Amino acid sequence: MEKVYVPTIKSGTVTTDGDGLASVTFATAFPDTNYSVVLTAQDPGDTTICMFYNKGTGGFDLKTEDDGGKAAPNVVVNWVAITYNDP
Image (cartoon, rainbow, N blue to C red; front, side):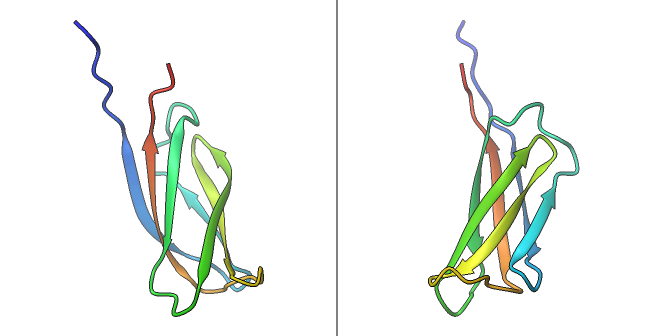
């Protein structure tokens, strides 16, 4: 019988600071870093780019910028982290 992979999904909302930076810490860590992250700026009113970095088992950091590359402060960001099967 073939094993069926069931992903783990974590999600939440975080607000960036005055420099456009935020950290997400999972209540329970993933067993490894085989997960994808999706970020969406919540009604920024202008073009906002969301990027994540420092991905670890316990969370990740993110930053927001405007379309000119300047920090976008105080942005509410919705995030989703989903494990993937990496055979």
